[in-house]
Length: 479
Ligand code: GDP
Image (tube, rainbow, N blue to C red; front, side, top):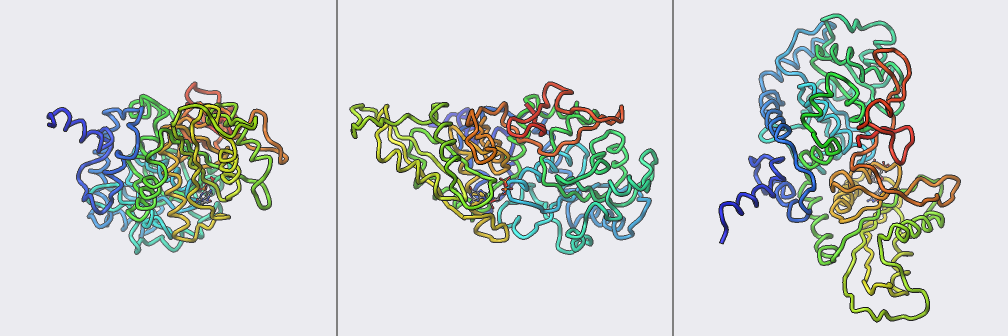
């Protein structure tokens, strides 16, 4: 029989320790309330302050979302294209759909954190596939930008030279940052190719000024969260929201990103067919950035070296005996994701032709091998999302350096991965891999600017919780 305590704890599991609101129709998005049946309980607990902030945000989104009176009022400001906006009841940040799926998952989460910190409503450009991949995260009000949003057609043309680009206007002295008056909207160019003026977004004075701009339109392919920690007006709030600093993407990603029923079908069918019955699940994500067709011998060697040195899989017995006398029947399922089929084939063959020294059996499963990135195709993107999610269900994870695809898996899973370092000159790196410091993603293109001293600075050495990444020496991550 259920005690009231066990019922309460079951409800708590289902809502991921209170991260999720219970106010949704279950059938419209099965993954939201079923994910806990596939995941181990998170090692991290969200703070009560974060939970109350999420509920407050949901309230704000309900009050200000598309179709509401404050939204219409703010749209009037936008349409009037004022250089000096009248303050609006609600302010907005609009996320433009841009780049590969891993990048988008990271940036939409970073944009949401920015919305929380700056008291804005997040609206996202559905692009070609966002509605096909992700459920609505906020109860009773959509996060998708309506089709008739007046700037929709302009997104693709926005660049660093656009007349409403924040950096461009600063560069040409068209904004007075210390003034009260501000334009009704600004475009924030935060892509990897942004310049020193665009980067002033990460300065306190500019943030103060941006408070007066009702609409911020953001394009980025980078997880800029580590640099938000270096903005003093945000720092305290971040500490309060995330007493365990490394859990930002872990909690916000689990809160925000629920696969649609189509994608959930891909995930649960695969998991149940191939992974559920194993005693241990290991994920290996292979992403190569070399020229020409794979699989590459130096990457094969790298994977073998990593799993053997780090003891991620039992060694094989190559001395000729084709039987293991051990009575160990433990089974290990290895989920391999890659655009190429060759890496998992090599591993599978090796563990078929030879017994393991422990007697354990190892199976290798690769859901797809799409050959190359095809982000315009629906099923391709569904599979990519499903595979990131499946990787996140592993007990242990191996990822590839530089890849946001891997960051998503590690972050959602709350796993500190072994990172396969990036090979140089087609050679196997030594060591082949190393353990990540934290489960947080890496910000690949951070600013190196001291806003107060107005001089360059190594932003990876200012505070103990923001350091350079393991896989990109100039990147920043929260540790
Ligand atoms: P990143 O380039 O590794 O940072 O990751 P992104 O997700 O931003 O872009 C890579 C894209 O290539 C993915 O979104 C997929 O479209 C595709 N891709 C790369 N690796 C895989 C893989 O292992 N499986 C699948 N299904 N697609 C992949």
